[in-house]
Length: 203
Image 1 (cartoon, rainbow, N blue to C red):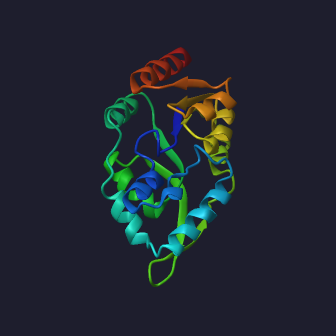
Image 2: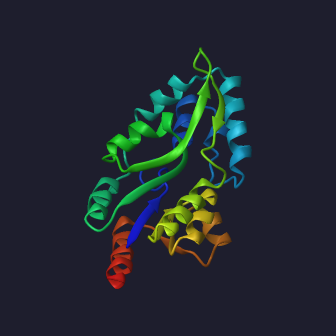
Image 3: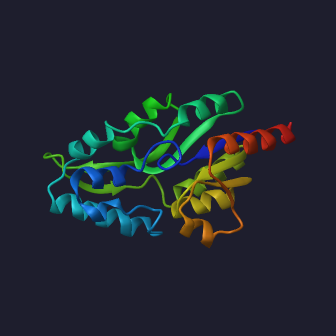
């Protein structure tokens, strides 16, 4: 039986940090795992910028509250539930992702969490485990499931490669160019077609 593990930002919802950058005018916050492959370097720099400009968790959450699923995402997820189960595997944080997951109909969410001080400043980030996305696929394999994995960024690559079928969904050109062996799909319609074929061929 196949399960689907998918990234969140860039696949179903807009990139959170890009939106924060647009709302605050802090240009460097627009950098994501689409541009920087080392997640820890990226997150440390983000926290430095938030503290430098005095932005709190609530400030980030206020931006997130304005975000909506990408066009076609809800319809795709509704269709996917008729075929199999969806697990959203993201390197975002519960404090960020929860309101977005509610809009998506509450698929299972696996992510990290933040540490804040009494003023609401984000002081640290806490990874559930290193390379968590790959470990999710390994765990599902140990339970005798097959995995279709969907992602768009550098931090998705280990998950995609570990899965039985890894799909780059609408990735930036640099990520696609560096991983030419991974299948690239750019629309939900094409994604439905490919997933249907994988699952139907397995039955």
